[in-house]
Every structure is written in structure tokens, then in C-alpha cells.
Image 1: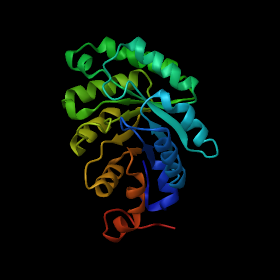
Image 2: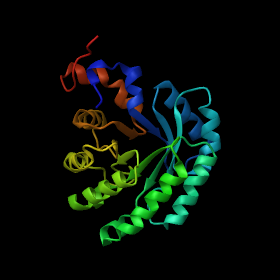
Image 3: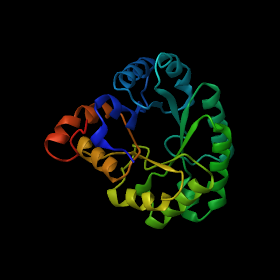
Image 4: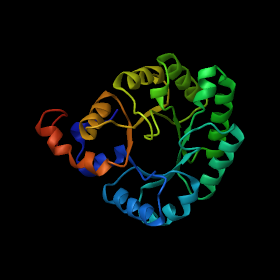
Length: 240
């Protein structure tokens, strides 16, 4: 669990995955995003697909920020074989962390073997050296469906449960806590994306509730609000 009392702005950066995901992303936007991710010492920098990975890998070569991308972003409705192929491409191009959208239709229909298959293929394509994160977009799911998805993430040894793509409605705190409880006692960590406005306050609330990572383009805004959040008593004071 993240201990905010021991973090300054620089160390806090590693709690954030920075992201540039719009449909109109260009090479320059990826390069600018990489500079921001390095400036704020983020854990990873995300683009929407393997297409941008060569640009991103080069831009992050002089840093410890992980080059990362989405898989079957943002719908998740492709076949397991297509998702596997995309994950293989991402790793081949240098991705060190990949987030795959689960097939929510299959999950809601009870076709759990489909979701299990895509997760196993995803994990196999990533191998042990690349972080894997399964995206639920839990705003579309019932509590029971969130639990079933988390059970599959645990079974398939996915590294992180991710709440949302950030392209649709974000998670509620109640939904996050359902997923947190479902993942308790396992090795699956918790990544929150789709943080609602006001982002600084909500992001820190999710961290205090147990999030291991926050995925957002607003990382600079949230990190720079650290002192303000301490001043108003929302998070613990810095313990030197």
C-alpha cells in the first residue's frame, strides 16, 4: 500500500502512469508526453496502441519511465487471437507494460472461458519481463461481474486490475472497493484510471483507499497538488 506520509513530489511520481490516448495523437504529442512523464518521474508512459511504441521507446531511452501501451483499446471486443497478436507486437516494439481491455460482453454473458482464454494469451505474450494489466471498465459492470473479472485476473496471474480505460465513465469508490476486496490475498495490484473531477482530490482518495497506481494524463496536476492536499488535511503530513 502506498504510504503518502513518506512521499515528496518526486517519489510520488512512481504512483502514476502518464497517458496520451486521444484519437488525434501525433508523433509530437507522444514526444511531448514522454517529456512530461520524465519530468514528473512517472512509473510509465502510455500510448493507445503498439503503433506508437517505437517513438515512445526512443523518447524514454534516457529514463526509467516504462514505455507502455493499451491492447485492444478501448473496446476490448476483438477475439483472443487478435489481442494476443497485438500484445506480441507491443512487446516486440519494446513495451514494458501493457494494459488489455477485457471482453465485457463475454463477461456479462457468462462466457468466462473466452475471457480466460484472452487473459492467458495476453499473459503468455507478455512473458515475465513485461507488466500486465487487465482493464475492466467497471462502470459497465455489476458488483458480481467485477468479482468474477478479478477472479479471472488472479487465476491468469495478471499483475494489475485496472478500473477503466478513462474513455467512458470512471469507477466509483464503491466499485473500486469491491475489486479491492476481490483481489485481497492475491498478487494482483490495483490501478485506478478514469478518475473523476475534481481529479486531485479523487486521485488521492483512491490512493488512500488502497490504489497502487493511478493512470491519467492529469498526473502533473495531481502530483503538484500534494502540498495543498496536505495543507487541507486530506492526506498525511510528510514524515521525514
